[in-house]
Length: 202
Ligand SMILES: N[C@@H](CCC(=O)N[C@@H](CS)C(=O)NCC(=O)O)C(=O)O
Image (cartoon, rainbow, N blue to C red; front, top):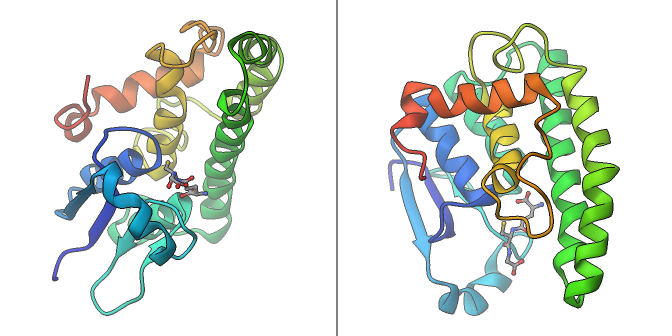
């Protein structure tokens, strides 16, 4: 193995896809190892934290946790700030995306449809706009988080917003982020960035 190897499910979604997109952003060739859901049960206990994605770099143990993988790709290939404080600020935003996913996850789990709908409608009216306001306040002239050049944080934000904007989140309108013009601009700019445009699935 000479290339970094990313392992995730065979789907263009969530934490695995954002790592694939980060490689595309960096212009780096990698082994895109996609596993079938059926083989997951056997693999799961062998993962560092029982989850995917993982990244394997030749000569090292696997790296788990999407944000750690993104920060590694970003640092290694120049799409994450070199300034320590700036880098930490980007990592905080990436953690903020994970917070949103965690909040959403419980609404989809073990809930009957009516309960799920109520919970999601409430999130769309309260938690999600509050989440977006915090990010919006940190974006400057854009179009990306740190200005004119996209970094791994932009890919994380893009993939954080994508299920909403594509209508994948039942009971939450695709327009839920429309009032946040800087976030929408960032989302559109990531999608339009040439190396991304070539690999983003529709
Ligand atoms: N905090 C972890 C969460 C990883 C996670 O929950 N991954 C999901 C896929 S996006 C997974 O592996 N699900 C299958 C399972 O947990 O069995 C990260 O950011 O990588």
